Each structure stands twice: as structure tokens, then as C-alpha cells.
Image (cartoon, rainbow, N blue to C red):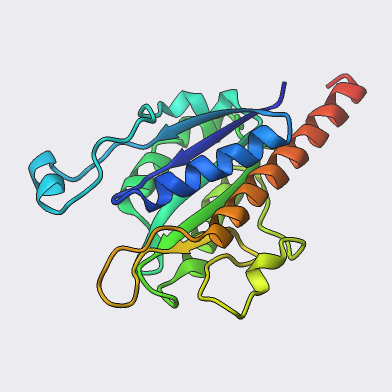
Length: 208
């Protein structure tokens, strides 16, 4: 069975919620899914004082786990138009996998969240995709066959680069991912899994 890893970092739970939706999409495609989060770098007392969601169920990932999967879907919040330092720190440790070409040919994809409508969703996804390209992965986005990304009747995340959500309600309060954003996350999970399954079937047919 094709194996997909959903690897995420989430400070306040928005990306965690999106990661669970992505995983639902993976399962809908008939693939197996593993959900992991990267280690927190913020001191525990600081995280607690800042209201971080510290009770996340997903186990912390190990670097070598990445090579055990056919596809990796990364979720990270935006930090000034780029991935969070926790995710970057984790990916910076994949040098051994890169040197041995262990991620070459695997499918990679990215989803994100921002605090505002123009907070860097697309640049965060694209800059994270750059890392995937360097690792030799086949990068997949969120195609326009997901029509929800073209909605004009409500504020929503999602773009052709990947699913996304807005974490702020515009008044300084917390905003949960909308149903449209979660639908985009599920679509992306299924899309990535279907491509990974097709690639795996092709390799099997060639006896690779």
C-alpha cells in the first residue's frame, strides 16, 4: 500500500486541524497515512504563556521516517512569508537523506496558515517547495479542479500552490479553518495520494 506522511508544525492548532483533514483525503484515496509533528523549539514556559496548543496527539517525527514513505505533505504556519523555524530546523537535518538520494522521486506537497488574508500564504508554500525540489521530490500543488479556491462569496484560503487557512478573524480573535478550507485540505491529501499511488504502480509494472 502507498504510504503518505503528513508532517506538520502547529502553534495554535490551525495547522493541526488542517493536517487531520489532509490525512482524511489521503485515506479516501486508498493510501495509508502517518501523521507526525516536528519538535517544538520554544521553551515550555514560553509556549504556555503564549497560549500554544501543547496537547497535540501526533507523535514527534524522526528524520529517517521521511524515507519510509512514498509521499510527504508538509504543513507549516507562515512566519514573515516563510515557513516556521521549527519546520525549517527539522528539514535542515535531512542532509543525510539528501546525500543518499533517499527522497528522490517521492511526492511532496505543502499547506499553510496565515494570520491575515495577505500574510504570505503563497510565498510560504513556494519557499517550502524549494526545499522539496532540492531533495529531489516531485512537487504537487492544489489544482484548479478544486473549485473552492476561486470562491468570491467568502473570505477563504487555498491557492494553486496548496491548501491554506486564515487564523485570525480580523478583529484580533481566533478563527477556525472554514469548511471550504478543510475541503481544500482533503482535496490536496487525496490528490497527492492518487499521484503517489500511480507512480508506485508504474514502478511496480517496470519492476523497479
